[in-house]
Image 1: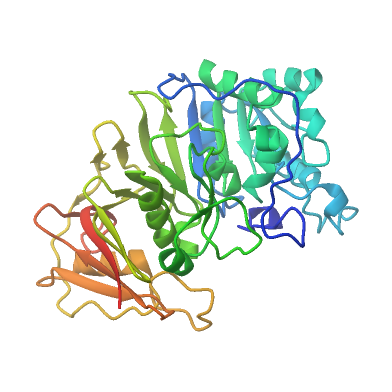
Image 2: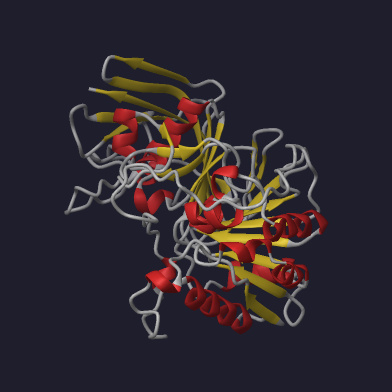
Length: 430
């Protein structure tokens, strides 16, 4: 696995607290209004996409025309450019935009694409984003894949920086999506698909303690967001990535509450959220892959700030796994046909968890995290509520999971709670 699969958030430059000097470009096409119907689809991966994930790569290729027909345009402007890669001359260790573009192009070809090409735009070549030649290359593709790295570099290179308008290349990708093409991305390549209030960084504990701030900061622990959003391909909820691996449920809940979003899509690694007709009333979703998708419903949630303590009550937590569908318009999960209702069987109490968000400061780690506590509660008979706490204190936050009469756990093997529907989550300081 090459380094382009990592979830890194590398600052564009050093020595400044907030990066606001972005590459300017000519005015272009502004984002279309919400509700615009797209004939195409999105395949968004929460990062960590493994080279041998035939299920997800196959989904992208099928939606781009199928094996032997799909033509995939690879965009890797979230990576460092060659000028910033000390290993640029070594194909075995390089991790720059051109190197990663070639890597993914080869990978898509090996998975069955008829052709896969790097679209040569990065922060060293911002002007290429308005090149008619590159636009012609985009127009010859049937699908697109946005690689990982730092989503803010996509803003710099494809959205004219602070102008936040479509470059010609992005406008062409947007038009292809509307006509039926598939747009896929992993990690930063999925995050950039977000609408308003796109996350640019942050850890869960600091987010709960300090709240959110608009902008882009070198301090990767600070919860930051871009009010203008990313490309705006997915607008029906706030979007986050690397959720389970990096314990990001806390930060996405805090940002949603701070910015007024009623729904969060929290993507797991090596697993895709497939979105049909994004941005329309007909938008529908399906989970593909070995992990899952958390959906938080904050319509009935209440956030309170008292002094230094922030709390959230009444958020609903659904966790979808392979084959499950979600209907945003109706706020409804439709479980895969192979899943049946689980009868809780464990008799022991849910074990204590003192690092619910996988703190970077906890060198020893914990047996399981946010999802682990929720699943353990789902599988436990006679226990309605369980708690887990943050590793950090000052204050220490407690997450409370509750399975009321509306809660439904589903299983494929009769033992494991794979899919969770309607669990209630609250967060409080102590």
